[in-house]
Image (cartoon, rainbow, N blue to C red; front, side, top):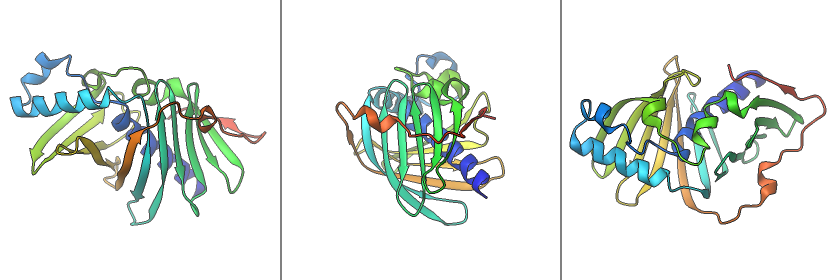
Length: 219
């Protein structure tokens, strides 16, 4: 059960970080133009411009799992390379990227697993700038009722399944993302109170590790 939870958290946070770190700047517009309308291309360009201006941000999140279980917490992104998703009690987990490692720690059991940042999708999305047009397969773009919904897949299949992004065009902010895993199970993460976080405390991206931690591969 704990192993499945760690795998679920890693998949959710890595997929979610694809969202927060940046959609394509549409540098590869010639290849995409054949697949999407001018309106869809404009929506992708707006999203890319928004996400690639993100440097240091913080906010709150609510996560609803495939079986309806709800967790919430706070997150911090500091590019390049750093991220923290901290779940509120009773969920004991925290997910941290420090620029070298991605760590998932169970504070209740004082256990942690580490994954090389370079072996996860975070190597791409926590970089200074990202062009996911080259790194992701964009399956669909829908613009309706003030919202833009984008469905994409990881080209390298490090994160199986699909990622659905919902962007609020009026307020120019990400509203939620939905992770659909390889078995069709859906996890929804809604974001609130996103704001700039000037000079975040470096300690946010440091995790106190137990002596028995075991580095792992991303697969």
